[in-house]
Image (tube, rainbow, N blue to C red; front, side, top):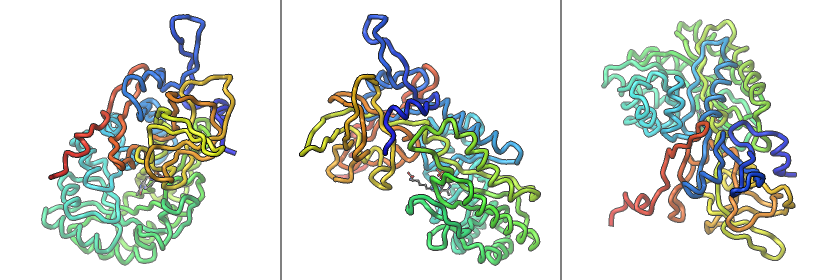
Length: 443
Ligand code: LLP
């Protein structure tokens, strides 16, 4: 059964989102339980900025990054936050301020990082199966930490671009370790049938070719087996294969300084992961560090979801409640264009009322958006406390791949985004207007 708001309450959210007693009206004793981000009631933010609205907790993002750093403290390492999870400049700036590195997969993501800090290139790894020559030139100009190369053709293309610019970029080959990870098939990447990486068996030959090219500096090995992987075993298995390859490559005479372990650590969407997150990251660190023991490599990590997922929520207003032949639909002003995960992956997101009323009973409902597709839903047959039109709902754990996957489908302007820090809230993306939607169009 899906967890109800009661289990949500018991699990206890991280300080990011928890219910707080807020005074209702002028009477002091008249208190109401309102979901808040740090100490800011989400109802206040909805009133000020409208809905749909993404709200993020700066404190939680920083804490989760720190959890990674602590778990890996025994190994020289750099956390390169995976920009694709949430690329808002306000969030990149927050992470940059605490010295975080970045994993980018496009010229656009690199430009975002450089917009926040011109000098951040030396903390950037560039992954992706289809980098264009233009994107390579941009990264070469700024001198990034590591190119993760995913095919032989890409290797020669990079060599050519580097020769033209008289550069010698550090490269790793992204190997495909043929490790199966239990996750949604769309986000598993570590098997040979997936488009990613180079089979481990072919890597040695390609490394030999790369080091013969005087415009490429062989520097590391990289791997990424998929996303939303909750147990440590697949990571350990992949890194064991990588460690073996590092030994072989060194015996072939290559200088391997970095092992990029990729991202992929999952979160618990069904319950708050706050109490267990530390242990989970410690186990993950162990799975990665143990196989690398004695190799004296610098470990690169590319977490995205685990840093920002639970730090964000999508606030939406209930537009209508309707009953169709005994089935109840709660129609919200947010839709699949704002948060695609339930429609695309059948993903579960916990949904709770922003204002909690102790006396309201649960009813079974579908929570759906206004888009003209049956696939436009956030939850199906979900137990939800009785809601009225005009009420606010919070879709939890929406900080990663929420806004990043949003679109303008149905000509819907994208939501606004707010970053909360303690008592203050900062608008980090204003709501789009109709003019924003049509600006690039020519007629
Ligand atoms: N590094 C590489 C090379 C990746 O491809 C990815 C994610 C990451 C790091 C970060 O993975 P994370 O730590 O966030 O799991 N839209 C999907 C997730 C797609 C992940 C794609 N690659 C979702 O909403 O679940």
